[in-house]
Length: 118
Image (cartoon, rainbow, N blue to C red; front, side, top):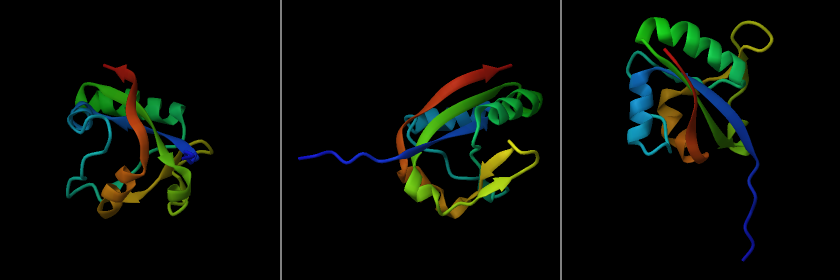
C-alpha cells in the first residue's frame, strides 16, 4: 500500500492563556469552538505577525501571549482567500466559526507552541 503525500501550509496563531489551555485539553489537535462574540477564527500566514499580536496585544490584555504553529491541508485552505489586515505582511485567513470543526479535521499533525511572552 502506498501512502499519499498531502501538501500542507504552515499557519500561525497568536493566542492567550485560556485558548492555549483549551488547545492543550484537545490534545494539541484542534482549536476550541469560538465564543458568541468571536464569529471568525483567524490564523495568520507568518510568524512575525503572530509574534507581534501575542507580544503586543495578548500580553497587555491577558497577561501572557503565545504563538502556535500548525499545518493544514493546502487543498482545503483554498476555500479561504487570504485577507490583508494591514500592511503587506499582515495576512490572515478568516474561517467562519461554524466551519471550525471542519477546519480542525484538516489539521495535519499537532499544534505546536513556539513562543511565549509575559
